[in-house]
Amino acid sequence: MWRKLLLVSSFCFVSSAQADLQQYVASLDDSMWRLSESSPIECRLEHDIPAYGKAIFTSRAGKDLNLNFSLDMWNKPDQITEAQLISKAPQWRPGVNAKEITTLTYHKQFNGEVPRKAAWSMLTELSKGMQPTFYYADWYNRTDKVEVGLSAANFGGEYRQFRSCLSTLLPYSFDDIAFTVLNYEAGGTALTRFSKHQLNRVQEYLSYDPDVELVFVDAYTDSYGGRSVNQRVSDRRADSVADLLVASGIEQSRIHKTGHGERRHVASNQLSEERDRNRRVVIKISKTI
Image (cartoon, helix red, strand yellow):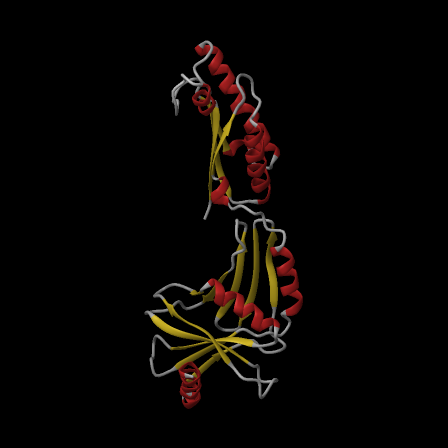
């Protein structure tokens, strides 16, 4: 009951300040949604808010289905500001009750971020034709109130495409492949079965990500055999992995490969399990942010 009273009092507060209310929401004619990114590593749905900025829903590749929402403002908050997020009916749907989604805090000079669960609720409300709306006090004049709404007009088609994109996201992220260790069978350049799977993941991810900046390929051997032979083996391993990455779309100039031979062991060479760990190629990837 107290939550209902709080919500009602909030609406009364907003209504009493109508004379000082700054409203930002796209009209029926101006409301535009667009799928600005659609790939197996990122899905992004954007909505322009005239004279204010844009609303952005983003989901990225990873083990779990994630969703981020950002209210990208032209003028960032000048101080910490408490805000209320409400789902309300647009003007052309009178009589439909509003409901609170969440409360949040805008941090100074940062865009408005919404928790994951509330972001999913926003999409659900939009799909119902409702208008997720932010209310907060103007950080330049605390007596003025600001209302920022996301229009549901023209939402359905782009939302279906967004959901279709979500179904194609890779089940692993950049962080999962940015540091990958590949191990080899004894002698030669044959990867273990598990390492072949790991390398396939790296290749697949890199084929979709245009922001990869540098890839470092460092190859190592165990200490069995002659030192010069081991050096050549590590060189061949580095070359073979680099060639596969080039085939994934990474420019040769961005790949730095080094064969270290039997140097820099990570385990003793007394046991076969330890030698298995030393026969490795380490892939380290950096990307622009």
